[in-house]
Figure 1 (cartoon, rainbow, N blue to C red):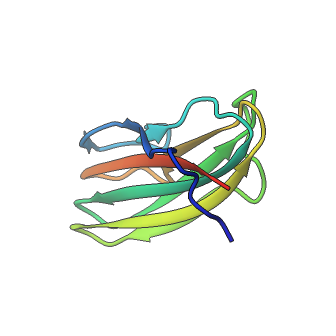
Figure 2: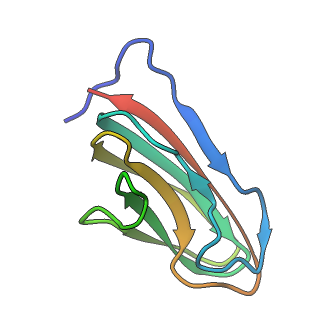
Length: 117
């Protein structure tokens, strides 16, 4: 179970805005390197068509996902949702949001991260 840390505020870590016909390498949000700790990761994502998204926990070199990542989730057409995970990060790892497959349509997403105890 996690607890909020007094004085710790959520930080928005990137939003690509509305992308048209995004592909699998389109980043919708990226935390950049994080310091060691547990983080509550909140994602808001959606699009004009249904899509499967990937929240990727990346290693410090940013060349591979850290198991059990990626965390896949689905959004139906014309809707968005908020999804929440608590993820333990070691030094310089990052979290990013991408689509599992490219889509023909529009999509938007954002990552919000908050360190927790």
